[in-house]
Image (cartoon, rainbow, N blue to C red; front, side, top):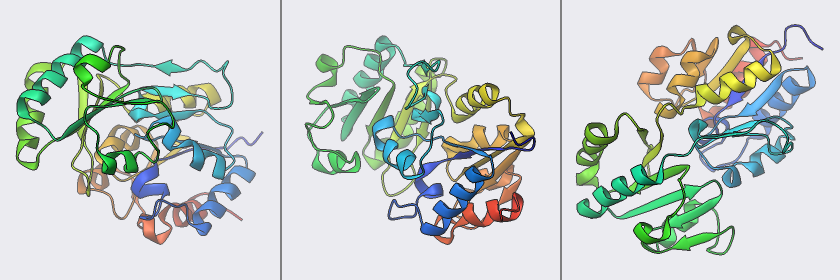
Length: 273
């Protein structure tokens, strides 16, 4: 076993993936090369399992995965691995849904692991979740009635003029129970998970499992849901297309997701053959 092996954590959207949601050939080659040389590669994403497992298989990974920004840490290939699912309470979820109804938001989507609940039918939202209504379980109808289990995450699609009101309400009334983030363009979506959940929590658990110290963790990201992970990793790398706040706390800034930023950094930093 390589003594100097690193744990490499990859965010998906805006990081590993190009704007067309693909892994470029150069990036794939560099990641596979790093794995050949003994480094450990994991995916750490805000996406659910079902929307990230395709990329996991494309890279031939056999490692644990961080989904829902840390609210689900599991091993797709090893059911005996000590998975951690940390949903928010249904009581909190219903209070937030009530606020959304009062503000007349465009839509609300709740996820319980891989089951999806959509408040109102919306083809555009179904499309970004890469699935038809029947695949996997996809329940449409008032969340007040349909959502009966603790959700892993809630996504709110507010009207643009309500975003700040809604985020203020979440801060004022639910700050001790939840974390909320704004998705980047083109979708103004507010994503909510249980308090204390972030990608660093998942990375810490996985690093402990593989006995990798923080100074040998390389993490790549571009958005505000990567802040804790980039800060926690000994080698936090912001993409060239990352938000300024992430660049300001990262140790390195690489090229953008459209310019093979991950490949360029790994080749130099790990001196890949």
